[in-house]
Image 1 (tube, helix red, strand yellow):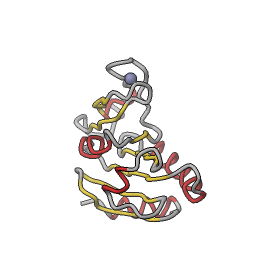
Image 2 (cartoon, protein in one colour):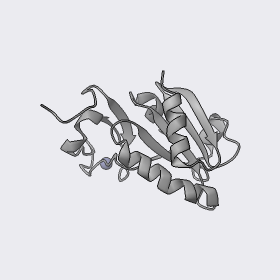
Image 3 (cartoon, protein in one colour):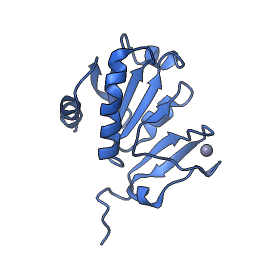
Length: 152
Ligand SMILES: [Zn+2]
């Protein structure tokens, strides 16, 4: 018997942090240590991944699991408070959801596209559709609640 609880079909599209190549990762097989198809470096999904203007839509639309997008900036104090919460959530729910961090200063198009007016803003997507949004810092329990209440 496999210890995996995720259906073998669950997958997500993530950008390689080293070479930016988009890779489709089978989330039921994270123990096999997925690697970038281009540069062969490891793709680590037990932590947030970086999202950029040029590929964010593909990442959001490419996941069969919920995607939490964190629009943040380096100078924003509540964003810094939010970071360990998102790290924890990504680790605890690795393979069940995707946490994507978007640096709003370096990626000005995406926040505008998604109507982000303040940071941090967390937007939850399922099947490419927005199903939840949180503006400002939120403790983990409340974020989990928002995430679970967004389930179909
Ligand atoms: Zn790569």
